[in-house]
Length: 262
Length: 246
Image (tube, rainbow over all chains, first blue to last red):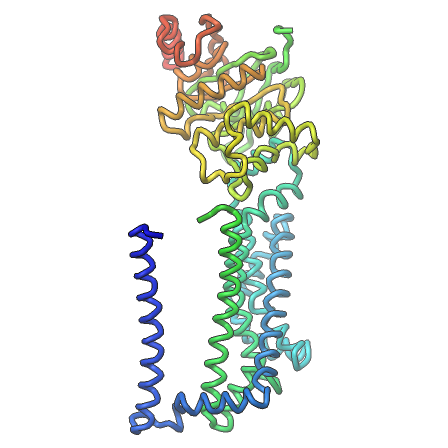
C-alpha cells in the first residue's frame, strides 16, 4: 500500500467526497439562514429544520415506513415485471424476425408516446391501489426494454454466430450460450435505466390515485400547502432512488469482477 | 492410410441471386483433400474464397455439384471469437458443449491439449488477459476438441501483427501437423500459403475457377520459417504471383 500512485489516487478520492459533503452542508445551511433572515419565503420554500422536525414526527409514529414501503414495493414490482416481460418480448421478436418487422411501427409509436398519458386509462383498467400503480410503473419501462434489448441482441457479431454454428449450434443454443450471456452487462444497464422509469410511473400513479406512498405525500402536501411535507417527500424519494441505483451498481461491479473485467 | 481422401469437391457451382440478377461466385470447382494434407487457396480478393469454405462447412448449399466430407468440419476465423465471459477452460469446451459431448473423456482431453500446447497455467484466466497469439491457439484447441477431420482456416492469422503472425502460423502448423488434420488455408498472403501448405490452389477472380494447382516439394522436415529461406520458395512465389496477375 506504499505505491505512490495509489496514495495519490486515494487522496484525490477523499478530497472529492469531502467537497461533496461540504457542498451539501453549505446548501442546507444557506437554505436555513436565507429563510431565517427572510431572504426567501419559508411558506413557499419551507426550511431544513422544519423538514427534519416533520420527518421525526413521521418517524416516531412509524407512518414514514408505510409510505416508503408501499412506494418501494410498487417500484420493485413495476421494475421486475416490466423488465422481465420486456426481455421475454425482445427474445420473441429476435426469434421471429417476421414478427419483429410487423410490430416495428407499433413499437416505435408506443415508444414515442409519453407513457404517462396512458396512466389514467391503465388505472381504470387495472384498478386503483397497488395493482393499478404497478401496472403504470411497468408500462413505462416495458416498451423501452423491448426496443433496447432487441437492438442489443441483433448487434451480436455475425462471425461469432457463425463460429458457434460451425459447432452445430441450434437457435436455442445461440440464444443461451451467446446472445444472453454476452448481453448480461447490457441487461444490467437496462435495469439501471428502468429504476428511474419505474419511479416515474409510481409517482404519477400515486398522484392520480392513492392513499399512501411518497407520491401521495407530495401531492397531498401540495394540496394543503404544507411545503415541508412536499420537500420531505421529495428528499426521501431522492435518497431511496439513489440507494436502489447504488444497489444495482454494486451488483454490476461484483458481476464484472466475476468475469475478470477490471 | 496417407492417401485416404477426406474431402471431395466435384464440379461445384454456386450463384447468388441479387437485385442485379444472378451472380456466379464459384464455377466448376473440383479438388480433393487427403488425410493430413494442408492445402492453401489463394486468389484475388473478392474471388469467392470464403464462399468456398462456407460451402465445405455446409453453412450454404451449392447450386450444383457435390461436396463429400468424411467426418466433422472445424472452422477457424480471422478473429479467435473467444467468449470474454468464459474462462479459458470453458472457452475450450464450448464446441463439445454445443455438440452435447461434454464427456469425461473430452474433459480430460481438453486438459491434456491445454497442457500439451503450454496453456495449462492459463485455464482459469479470461481471454482479455491473454495475447493474440495465445488466444488463436486456444481457438484452435476449441476446434480440435471436436475431432474435426477437416479444418478450415479463413484468413486465420491476418488479424495479428506481422511478427506474431509468423509465430502463431508456425505454432498452428505444428499443431495441425501433429494432430494430422487435413486443412484448407484460405489466405491473401502468398508467402503464408507457400510456407504452410503441401499444395496451393490458385483461383481466378470471380467467378472463382482453378487456374493451377501447385504441389510444393519442400523437404518434409523444414519448418514454415525455414521454408521461407529455401531456394524453392522464391520460385513458387514468382510462379504463383505471375498466375495471379495474368
